[in-house]
Length: 66
Picture (cartoon, rainbow, N blue to C red):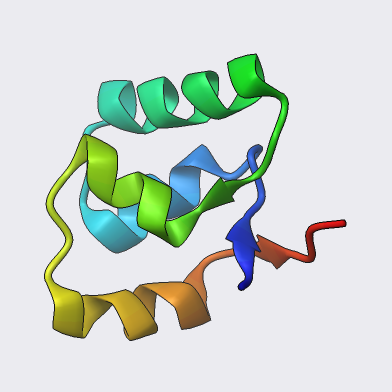
């Protein structure tokens, strides 16, 4: 699975129409855990319509894990 790079909060804001504070919270939690944030993890913080997930995955800045 491709993962969102943890230093791309603006992508979360733009693609998911999140507030800057919520995007910062998501990125902050990822940094705290010292890992990459998977697109599935985003759904823990905000609702993501299932049909929108593939589009989000294609547009987010992604990095391989491992």
